[in-house]
Image 1 (cartoon, rainbow, N blue to C red):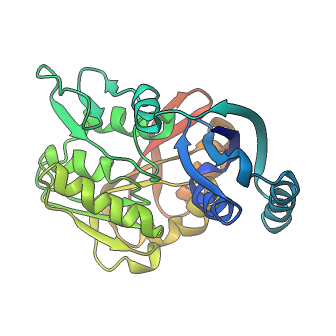
Image 2: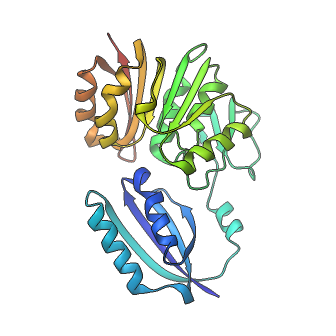
Length: 279
């Protein structure tokens, strides 16, 4: 049996990936595989309708004009999807500090923190430069005894890492139901005690020493004032999920609420920031 494979490149990826995948399920697509810039979608050849596909993409673009989307379509033979997924899902090693891996990878004893993640459809496997860079920043962050928020937590990998490093209280929030459930599964896999909540910044009801927000530029600009209300003086705000050319506007917006830029990283044109609240 042949399948139709569609490669999607999507920006912003974090918000719209699951929405588009859900729409594709309605026209016969049955499995998906994340990539660095989007995902691969698969549909049995006999169920694929070019007309329905084009109408769906046109409607999606009409409803979400801020999204950049491109597709590549090809036919492929039926495959062992689990085996293919395993081959295309390498583990990620960050500076001999943190090893993010799936269940079919062996942990590395020499690495300080091994985190086992089953990503499913959630964002946050450390393959993407944004998550990778936040982990880099956390390597040198003293989180012992501190309260941590992971906003837009995806798989929960960043929350899990801070708990492993000795944070006192860790909370993870995501407004995607799949990510919410996936984070809970991954937290159990790693024997971590983390509070997981389903929602957005409106759920914030306590203060934190460290606040992580790996989301996207527009949400960060919209919600940074809410974050500021729940970060203690001299607290740290980690931001990522945006391009390097967006840094200035985010630093300017954060400055309105008492944050000073401390560290900036960039990888493949994606940026990550460490900011300190000065008041």
